[in-house]
Amino acid sequence: MRHVDFSPLYRSTVGFDRLFTMLDSLAQPDNGQTYPPYNIERTGEDAYRISMAVAGFSEDEISIEAHRNVLTVKGEKTEEQTESSEFLHRGIAARAFERRFQLADHVEVQGAALKNGLLHIELKRNIPEEMKPRRIAIAAAPAKAKQIEAQASK
Image (tube, rainbow, N blue to C red):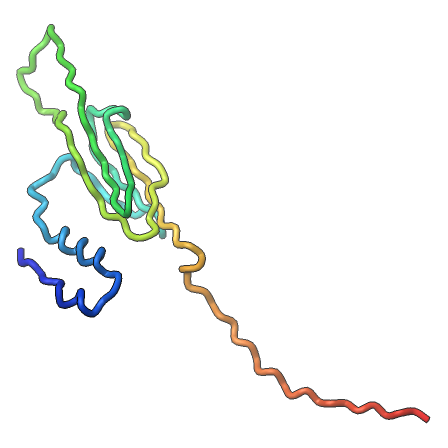
């Protein structure tokens, strides 16, 4: 993949360096990282869910951290050695992993649950009220007030 040089844009923009850094990191190859598999789905207008297949991991062996628009999911399997058995074939992956997801502005983690070998992470976009579009009412121009003169009574 070609590398895009964003340096000319740095001269004429202010505050977009995070965007350019994110675009640069997306252009980097993922090094073939496919474990664990995951889905990202939209569950509502401003709601999302990341589902990761983490069969064999318990809640204690998985950590989830959200920091500065990056969601990091780590899994470290504690090695269980049993003296009485040996594996003839080991097809269930029990290796450590780390997945990072770039979150858009104002996307927050609502919660996570581990069910049937799937880790579900619920996300919601909470846009602050001052950043939401608002409708401005147009006031009618005030009509010229007519002056009424009172007559003096005799």
